[in-house]
Length: 193
Image (cartoon, rainbow, N blue to C red):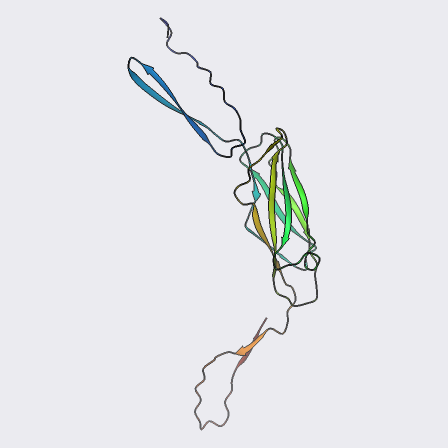
């Protein structure tokens, strides 16, 4: 520094990237044989596109199951991500209608995107069934770059049966002690759905 100058600004060029983490770098200043170190941390501005929860639940009698996908951690740039369903124990065309959809967030948009999955009600007692929910192919459409997806990109939709069958019939107690001289004994049988 020149005489009478107590501080100066040193420009450092920061390049935005699609790496989804905070990055740090060190700055060393050597003066009079002494090294002074400063650490700069660049806070990530890339969003996480993910499901809000791991398990979604619905009744098969509902017309649609709603699944929510969020954008967290940044509002700059426009992004897309592909959503699609896969069979678990539920079968497309039997328990639900498969969905393939691209979700879009504009620059500054941090709203939740809702996907409607059509459900197929049946008259059979067949228990609960599951549908795989998936996110893939995240893109920063402003920059034309791939977005690395992390966090909750796979989830499950549980379709709960709304019919009741004959249920499970069983003894209330599986070990009985009965005196041989009582004549008649009463045993309890239960039915659960």
